[in-house]
Figure 1 (cartoon, one colour):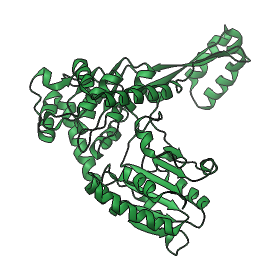
Figure 2 (cartoon, rainbow, N blue to C red):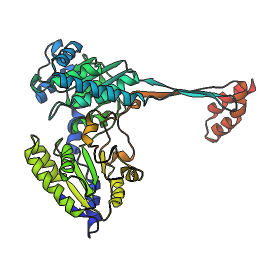
Figure 3 (spheres, helix red, strand yellow):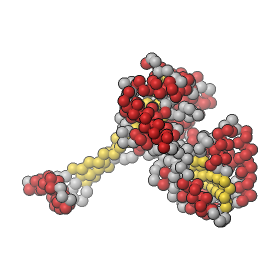
Figure 4 (cartoon, rainbow, N blue to C red):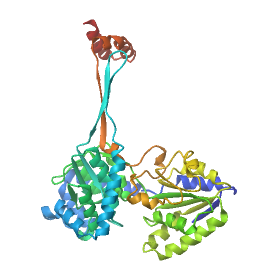
Length: 430
């Protein structure tokens, strides 16, 4: 863990190194993924059988072994303890309500020259959702991916998830029931993304692939973008907590560890204006990490990538936050809105001392699939729009074409495209 003072010599160099640290896949991962994608494209099901046996120690040898369907989803849901069922239902209800408000409106109007213009929004035909199943299985991720697709109106929604040794978390199946998934395919990794993008003998191709995964999954999505739509190329989790010294250090330590426990490559950063508070949080991170069931992962993340920065005043944190463009940003201060007004780049922001990032991971409503690796400078979290596309339309009568046509001819001729000009000119001559 690095402890930095913004006023100290050498801070800018140290901070720039943190900003530029990608913590993502290397060239070897890219080469491995390219080989896997080519194998699935060329050999289809045969490649999936071999790769699944190799990476997940699971055999795809019968039609039933490939997939899990609605009956199994419903059984898993009914078998849950009632409190967990209620939690999944509440999460689904809140996520649905938030994403329904994102639905875009069609436009259809006539402008001043009499030309009809507009656009209509339509869902994609099919979506494939990646659900992690290796280091941890996340039913919350399935809800966060499936519900926006449902709200968008996607007709066919399938999921893929690795099932090491044939095992899968029953909570994932229960979440599939709540979200209305059609099928869950028992494949994972780059090969699963390839199957969704290219299609195989057994698995039908989709139009969009979304959902978080490891470095191989992220790299597969990056390489396949264009063959299939993707939500984003996501890297390791991140949290930035901006907190003054009046916070409870235990609360802030827990917030930092909530992301550190995801993966050894995750990053947790605290910026505070109180040096004593910084040391208290550092101490509480050490104490809490030792007691976590995820201690090994959280400790590795904090030791390798954890950062505490002490600034002169809390407002000084915002320029640093904008450079980091973090996935999650907590503003644990008395007046979070004042800081939020100046914050330009963040995946999702959590306002006030009583809004831990963890509540957003499950059931607050906004999506938890968010841009990482400074991509919040130009990208947004998963939304209904990731499962939709906009088609523009226009309609001109004689008068409308007469009003704009001559300018169109002039521009076409200037670009050296005479057929463009002719297609307008002939109509004007009529």
